[in-house]
Length: 109
Image (cartoon, rainbow, N blue to C red; front, side, top):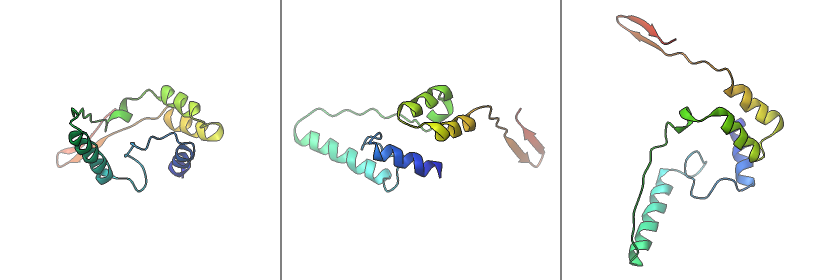
């Protein structure tokens, strides 16, 4: 439910760039590949220099400062009970990993 509301807010207010392909309904990796290939081929046809820089940001959310994220949500118009919900979700959370093997169970602190 929160994803749908936040996604609607970001789309209605045009906060997400059209080039953003991740986490968007109806837009997938094939769209990203087509867009990239089209841009490269168009540039090559115009005799322009083409270069690429690719970064894996898949673990980026794991390292983000939660207070900065909450500030950005507020800046982009997420306020009131919605911002409070995110703050509650991101504050004082604990995580535990449990691995069960034939030799026993192991867990993190």
